[in-house]
Image 1: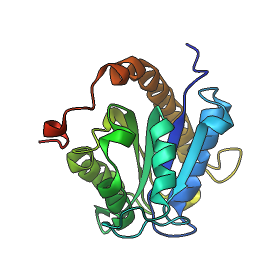
Image 2: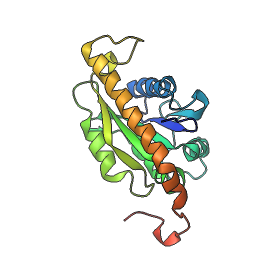
Image 3: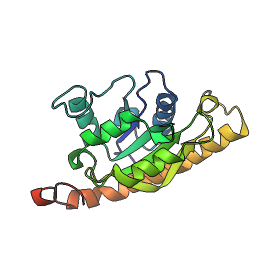
Image 4: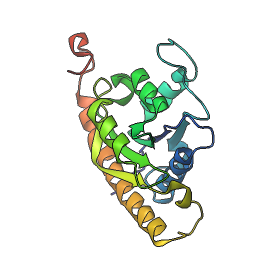
Length: 202
């Protein structure tokens, strides 16, 4: 299958400026290009640590209008979120309060949990439970969890067996994301967004 027109946005959900989430998001963005799923100019990286959003509500606040454009062009989204105290961090929760169906509805989303230790599953469950409600992002049944994140995805070659396995699993998940993104394009185009009575999810 060819993916010449795919556009994928990658969101690094940590509010830290030099985060492991940002590192992992950058790695996944580059792998999308290396694997041929999209050209470099067809990917975008939104790093909430380097480019923070003010707490909602803040109408028209930078950098949200820029993020809206990047997300609106995207055919799929990767959401990289660290686990802080067993929860999704505040920056990514704030991001999803801004996000609407105009940017994300009926687009596939790949969730990536990040942990300094052996955790990382709780933010996956948390975001699956609620973050899609109004924006209608379609989370894939596949997700990634990068554990011991400081030791993973640092160099061109894998540093350990765990590092090798997460790289292979990441490539597998990106292939699934690309196939969903291609498949959902006509679905999204066929769904009307002009029903104000159903602007929000139930």
